[in-house]
Image (cartoon, rainbow, N blue to C red; front, side, top):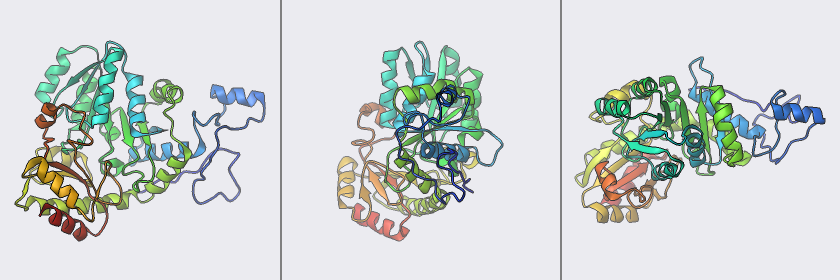
Length: 393
């Protein structure tokens, strides 16, 4: 994938020979030449910046580039916001779209933070429903029975079991019943999957992960294909709730995006090699990875994903004690509650990312005490395999 080039448009920092890199603009506010100009910028008559919480040249450049990636290869117009975190992006979208009396339909196997956030919407009069979004018959029955559905929210591939949902079908079905489709595309990135081109209305990212790629900052992004929705629904909440990103994290993401396609190819190749090793290991009960030919969603994966990505999970024989022994024995891979870095990162979902999810729901969705999530890095893959082999014992 070719990454489009963006320059900062603010005339106060443009130069005859502009810098090669997008500048890091560390400013909390911006100067008006006159009261009249300030009024025009506030009213949107004239482009410009006002206050750091409203926008910033570096922040806007990152938002524009991520939006362009989500629409790359098409003539679709896309619009982005760069947020303080992935959770800020999700919060902005759901607070904007979900009103009292609305129903939000999602999957059970969500990231724990997203699940907890959706539960808090109950205090705003929003009802949460869950379903297997890959089961077309039961999903359509549920949508037909429930009035007031405003949002269908999906992670695909899901965290941490790597289940994959047919986005084209889900978008068509959601729209048929008057709902909008919101997709968390953090695991896949726009290099591997472009939900807006498959019919989704809104995409969210934790740019902390693959888009940054180096574990150096926390940020998020929103991308949609409806300018009015962006301007009238998301942008006011973004400004008033303080969910805007900062220029330093935006600058880090802009630099990370330069190598995103290369990194995703290496992440995917390494993850496939690790998967093949785990599938043959006698102490591994099961493996979840989109690149497995027998994956239950292989038809969907073949249709909508360009790469299989760097995320996988596997269940060890022996449950929690086996997982504990494995993670404590690692020497090369790192035990940490994040993903998407150039380094290989390991997490125990049941006690970390999904510890707030009731156990019966976790188990129903394959998140057992013996499940380990692995974000496969771009190191020499044989070093990764050797460490895993040693730690399993």
